[in-house]
Image 1 (cartoon, helix red, strand yellow):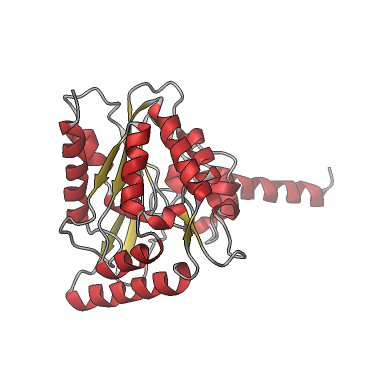
Image 2 (cartoon, helix red, strand yellow):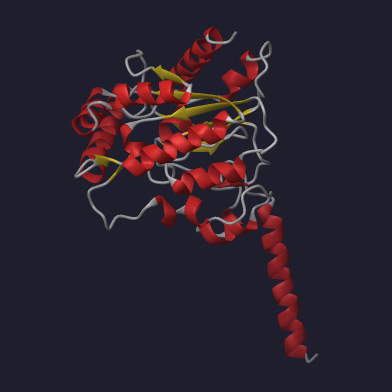
Amino acid sequence: MGPFLRKTAIALLIVALFHVAAGFLADGSTDEYYLRFTTEKQRSMILGGSRAAQGLHPSVFNHLSEACTYDRHVYNFAFTIAHSPYGETYLAAIKEKLDPTTKNGLFILQVDPWLLSNPGDTTAATEADRTLGQQWTWNTNPNYEYLSRFWDRGWGALGHWPMGDPDTTSVLMPDGRLAVHVAMDPKTVERRTKNKVTNYRDDYLPGRIISTERLICLQQTIELLGSHGTVALVQLPVCVEIADMEHSFAPEFTTRMGELARATGTEFIDLDTMAVTFTDGNHLDEASGLRVTEAVWNTLLRGRP
């Protein structure tokens, strides 16, 4: 081997070793999704969109369920309205994350009209074009495939790059929940809520319709998970403006979820009118998330034999 080739090989080896070492620095500050692709297969899960990702706390189930027979280590495998609406992509991801030996798991499925509908713009990117639809490896740590394909800030920034805008920081917890820390003074919350409502009205609402295919996939998801334990559908609170938008294209949504729960032998927990505090009109703040999760648990506990 000539000097040039030798030097090139050494340089490539150093680069490769740097990337291997950097992979071990990836953690909950890497981005909002990475850790969910690094954990082992799970026996109990929280599923849904960002309302569940931020608002439903696995710690509540894990700490309060000592006296019951659920597989207690609940993991939050919820993403966003764009990444994890109920459909073939999310169902395939759930199958990848589910431990097939599970017999008495607990599965909390957050439902809302956005997760069961399609936009009017048929050219819009679907979840199949995003991370869940493109990822090949799911349960390995470090997950070099994810870091190579979906981490876009430079490997040198791993472990040192907080997520968020100036008044928001986000950390993905080891249990899968996205912990978002935000300024909660009234003016900031009002501004953030106004922006969120505008975002939904302009980007998500136009032409929105409930999808028969997504409803079928939700039922298939329930049936899959029901064969491994207890399933509950949960509707979380949301601000009045976004709730009005939901009612405009899905006026019978709550009724349909109740009917689906009865048809599949599951529980439907409607917390839509629970008094809570939001960070932006769409996501629960920390304290409200804990109270809502406790309400879910108490409802499930009452239904136990």
